[in-house]
Amino acid sequence: MSRIRDIRILPLQYAMPPEDAYGMARGLTHVRGAGLVLLDTEDGVEGIGEAWGPASVNAAYLEIVKPYFIGRSVFAQRGIAQTILAKHYHFGTQNGLVAMLSGIDIAAHDAMGKLLNVPVCDLIGGRQRDRVPVYASGGYLTRAEDHLAALAAQLEPLAGRGFGAYKIKIGRHPREDAERAALARRIIGDAPLLTVDVNGNYTLDIVLESMRRMAESDIHWVEEPLAPQDWAGYRELAARTPIPIATGEALYTLFDFRRVIDGRLAAVLQPDLTLCGGLDTARTIGALCGAEHLRVSPHVWGTGIGLAAAVHWVAALPSYPHAENVPYPALIEYDVGRNPLQNGIFETPIRFAEGFLHVPTGPGLGITLDRDALRRFTPA
View 1 (cartoon, rainbow, N blue to C red):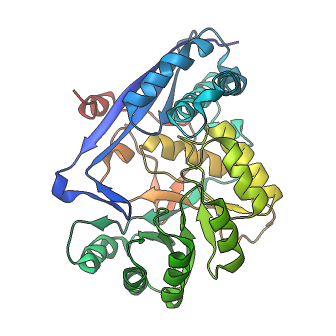
View 2 (cartoon, helix red, strand yellow):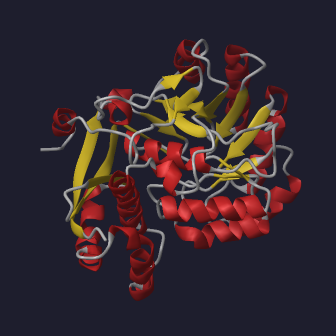
């Protein structure tokens, strides 16, 4: 039995000039960051994870949860996390506590894989595929006055890189949504999937108007059309929508995902492994989605560590209910924005080629941190 000796969190941050900020309908940012979770075992193995959100907030939660993990088996992380949630129920579940537990869970899985000399995907169900498809997540809103020119400048360099699917940001006004979707479709062509992301900035009536206006652009899904906890809105939208709905990036723990899955409030569930509870929770979400015949597509918008976890999760997912022919395989979000924390913190990034990420074959997550790069991205 390998016991946990220590858990640390290392803040990572990359800042751009403010004028280069990009983002979504709810706002723009010129700073990208996350918390790198480092879990040490008594055997000398280091597990690597990622916790969503400000590292300073996660560090405060770490001080609370760390004593529960120290001296315990690295294989017991699930029960420890659930004990913490039960004992500290007054904290709720939509917060940095769950993000911190997510990062620890990912780091524990990385350590387990290294201890057993197997990839994470083999720990959580077995490798079903050697590469996983991604969608180019970009088309961001910016400070540019000509939003269509800015969108074209982002999409045109991507059109020849083999992506089979794209996502763009919308959500400021239905008329603008239609313009952005039409332009994106012209640039990427008819064959690739085109998805759009509102980031929860609309009410039900505005979403329906936006969908009507975008109808000619062949939208594959509308992501987060409503605020995450607008349960009644999602229920009515699910009954009326002409376009599939995707949501889940802002849902923590299994409880909220159960509401979406049991109510069939969306066609595509999008857990972020760095905040939903980690690989353990994601496995349960995947099983429940399979039981309800719903699709999954993990949200990824932090560092390459969260991306690696998502790659292993999707690599281990069954294709059920499909057999040999899978019309729409589970897609991983592949951020194409300006973010060196995605690939610039590894000695060798996860291999991308022609719209696919190749699943690492090394033990654990199969990634090696570039320690010099970490120092460059650690705030003073």
